[in-house]
Picture 1 (tube, rainbow, N blue to C red):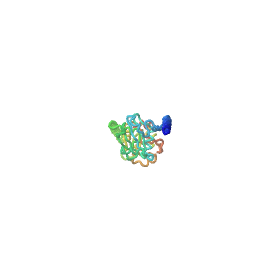
Picture 2: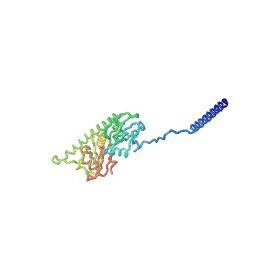
Picture 3: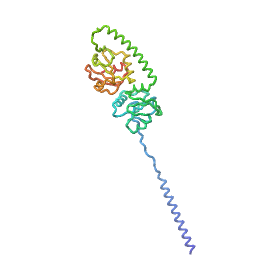
Picture 4: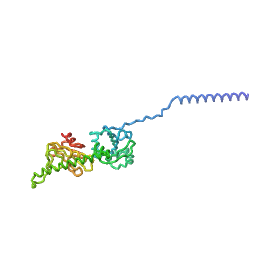
Length: 292
């Protein structure tokens, strides 16, 4: 009898073990038959292009062209906005890429620290790996940026233009002296604008010819110096007077015409009222092309 009971107990254990194994197998089959997708969709944002060659900063754009410059911009900065407008409207030359970044944004913190940037309207030229090549402040347009990154080659070109300018000025001085000999020594001194003249600004010269353009020049601005040399070396056509005003001291004129950056040109009528305003230009021809 005891043997029968022990045998029955063993059979029950075997049966239970078999059922348990079957259940585990079924559970394993269910679990492994449904694959789990652990992947997460990542949205990739494309860099914001403001104009050809001018984009919002994105490190993926570094090294795409020969020269890359980071522009530390501030929305409340008038000269920053003027530069931005110039880059959008006048364009960026081939071989140059300008990347704009908000100096107040959190995303610029690491870049400011890396390049030692402490103020708005700062430009940093970098290589393909994002390493600092050159840093400066105050460029107003693409021409000025190109001159800054041109290095010795551009400086040599500026020196050649300046030498030519000095030769032209010496010749013009001789011509003026010859004309002065025919003027009475007792005659009161007063500015005289001849047809086709490039001269320092004087209010009495405004309207002395059919067209008058005021050039806001700054001695510390490389592109202004190049433009100054180009104007002096060129031939101003009859009916045009170009007047060079000092950007740093011409407070009233800047306020009158809303000038916020150097290397600005303002065409005015005989009464000094603004007709047209623009940025950039390195010679007389560039001024003539802009006249209304």
